[in-house]
Length: 158
Image (cartoon, rainbow, N blue to C red; front, side, top):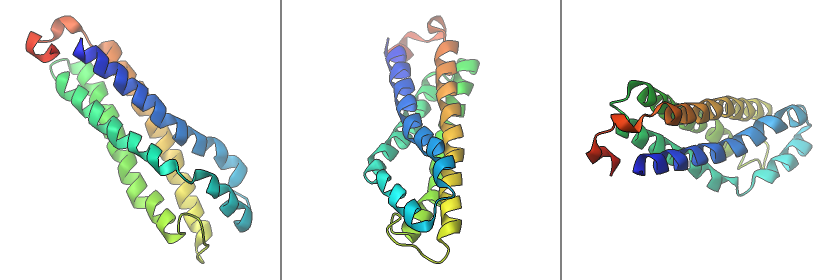
């Protein structure tokens, strides 16, 4: 069934998207109070992680597609919409707070005068996005569990 395959792929992408977010949150207590030099060195471990950011728009699209396909099943639809909204909010948070901090510091290669404020902005935005990513994964999974194949029109299953 096409819906089940899409649900599976969506849950996998949501789970993969949680990994880097969770890593940021797990590292936060160990690095938030580091002195500037040490903090900037530690931030270097994230070089190349931008490619993982592509998981968020992909998860947004997949959950949106599921919401559309499941629109006649209120419970499954609502969970899919919630997951979609989580990823939309995550992207908004990224572009409003995380990305500007990256830009202001040259991806943490130089320290502007307000680097400590930018550190808090960067860390807090990642922490919030981790929680949203977890909520999105749970919602996508709940949507799949709530889905009832017998309630689908045959044309929608193709």
